[in-house]
Image 1 (cartoon, helix red, strand yellow):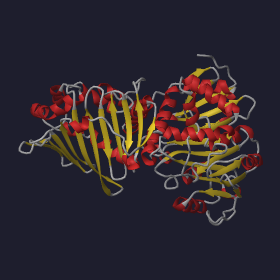
Image 2 (cartoon, helix red, strand yellow; image 1 turned 60 degrees about the vertical axis):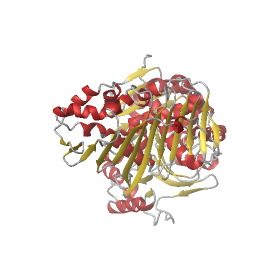
Image 3 (tube, helix red, strand yellow; image 1 turned 90 degrees about the horizontal axis):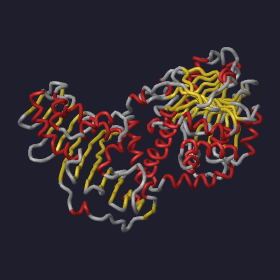
Image 4 (cartoon, one colour; image 1 turned 90 degrees about the vertical axis):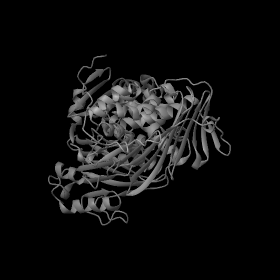
Length: 609
């Protein structure tokens, strides 16, 4: 629900611009007079001010009220607060202190001392820090921050012809929304079907200027630069996800080569080819995907991490560090070497690269394998649906990696920049794997799921070897899998926890999955499982590539559908669909990737930068 609330708030804020554009040019001065105190505040012409917004929005068919307050106290100090019945977060910044307070959790994260680093919450630099050109907000913001209210009003009032009620000082547009400036206050009332917003501008009070107190709170000390970075990068990335600019929605698709690596675009999908030692692979990964990796880090650590902090009352990075400490003994040394080279190439803290690569993938997904009598040609078709967090923008970092590690089996994995593990993959021995997350978060004394998946891709040649790897490895949390082998037309479903593992054979009936269907392995849950079973029964014996894609369409895939993959391991081919900012993966076109052809092309000479 927090994601929906954030989107509603951004929509309400962005409505400022189209609403006030609905006036006739003759009303420009009238509009300028009404907007002047607000524009002067945000353009830095006022040393201090307090802005309060009361926002009423419908979320899941229920009315919710959010109160947002910003106090600019002086050139070093601000208060910022968002309050809802289910969550409450306060940011307090003074010259030598920055704190995030979560009153409902009775917790405070406090950083003290001189502020250093590029991501700062200093009021004079706040707008340019929080908004990038990868968000449409970045295109609108200069209209406000330049502070020329007359020019702004003239430009805005030239766009449309509004209805204006002089008696109430209200602008309206075709009955869709209205914007009112009450005459007795420095305030704005906005009304539409999306939101009702009351904004009021006042002077800062002595109470708002007071030094923050943390009495009665559990205080966790955090490096001050880290506290400010959490907010700056989280908000900036959230604006990019909620209101993306063409830099994200229509990126330039330019290929490039570096030593041991190449970036290609295949029908609009980002494909990165890597080969060599762990150090060479990690270095090439960093050179080819530096920008995309930063987006992935910001989405995971700063957007999701902030949401998780508000939900749990814990500092998210500390949770990841604790998880990594328990997981590290079970991670192969060559994977650690690759992550270290990746961090060095990206010029980021190696610890950051390590903890991002053990980010808990608690996915809610579906998977299937069909072969023999179930398919039109007897081939094995292995489908994998990843339903997870399109709301944090991971789709901007979506990358298909074709990797030929020296001395190990080459493979393809459908993943994300900066992430070396696998959640969906196939190797050139015809082994394909997909996972589905369950419960048990916090059971981290074993091999990370994504590490185990990658190990299977680069080590296993048969389905029995994959099963043996899972049986003999210490496991984490609760996960479900579909493993398949295109050489033998074999597949198996897997239910695995740290304590036990169960293999579900094709056609096997199961209490959770229902009656078995011959030559089929189907894994999902709830209504999605029932739909998946019904579709298999409806077209049994007719499944080919197109019918198998249909199996993964909505509602088997959820609204949060991040990527879908259809493996045809006998042919060394896979079909990939990634979500964008408008559509889930299931509603996007599939791209055909031929692993064998790409691996063959990697034998061609690759020049250095």
